[in-house]
Length: 110
Image 1 (cartoon, rainbow, N blue to C red):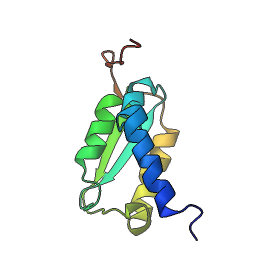
Image 2: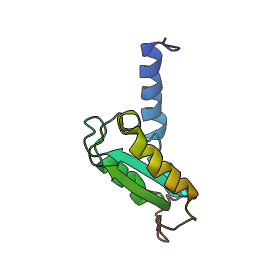
Image 3: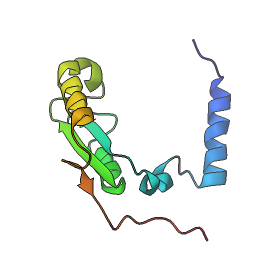
Image 4: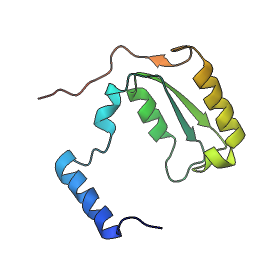
């Protein structure tokens, strides 16, 4: 059941474009400081894996996992594989396999 009208969603997107230049989250990525697991499906037709690469490159302590056979529904269709990746990530020490970056480009406040 929809809790909002499609017109309201369109207006919210227009407002985002006007007020934030269309940037929903990209400008905030360099500020994420906790270790982050980015999981993407190699067969995802809606959100290609280069989106995951983009996120992982901009989040300081991140690790990218591409499930080659996974699609947009990989958390369901590849649930066992996804859960194994997630559980291993949550139990490993910080920065064991994540990319620690010292040169994150943080947008200026000007």
